[in-house]
Image 1 (cartoon, rainbow, N blue to C red):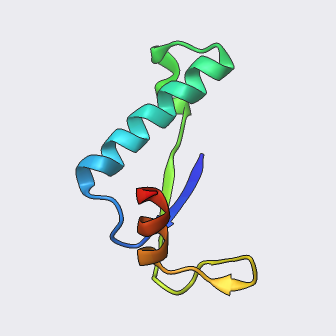
Image 2: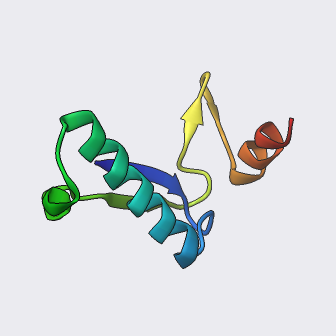
Length: 70
C-alpha cells in the first residue's frame, strides 16, 4: 500500500498507527491472518508543501488542515 501525506503532517506515532491500521485492513480484505502481516508493505511518501494540486490549483498543508476542521 502506498500512502502520500504532506511532509510533517504525521508524527512517528501516527505513522506507526497508520501502518498498523492499513495492515489490518489489507489482511481483512484479503482474508489473511496476522501470520501473513509481513506480506503487507506500507510505504508512506511525504510530499513537501506546495507540491500537491487539486481543482487546477496548488493545495497547501494549511488548506488541508482547514478543510479537515470543517
